[in-house]
Image (cartoon, rainbow, N blue to C red; front, side):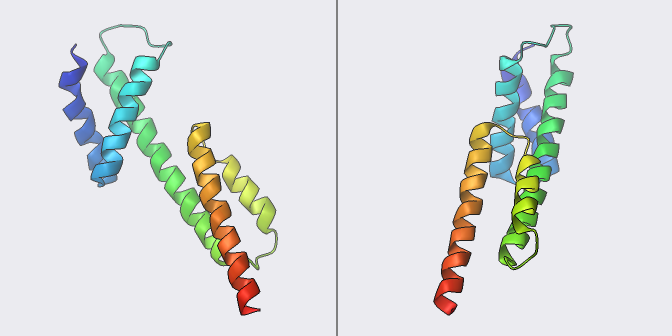
Length: 124
């Protein structure tokens, strides 16, 4: 099976689920990177099924990450909530992504927290 021939199929599958061209392009590339980097796959003439499995899992993870980010944004917008730190740590621990993706998310979250603190200090 020629992997280049399967790229459009996987892209269409991912785009159908995400409805976001840029995210679909990124996830499709990630599908092929994971496929090529996989050491557990045994060639049993089921490469296309394996690609779809990876794509499905990445789409699920994409939505899970968006839900967590949205939930964190809500938490940050209401910094007076009781138990803020444990909630933040709990939600960060749910991120099942590469350490670089988790690092970027954490940096974004910390930036929002700093902005909220600065805003509260100015407003007094």
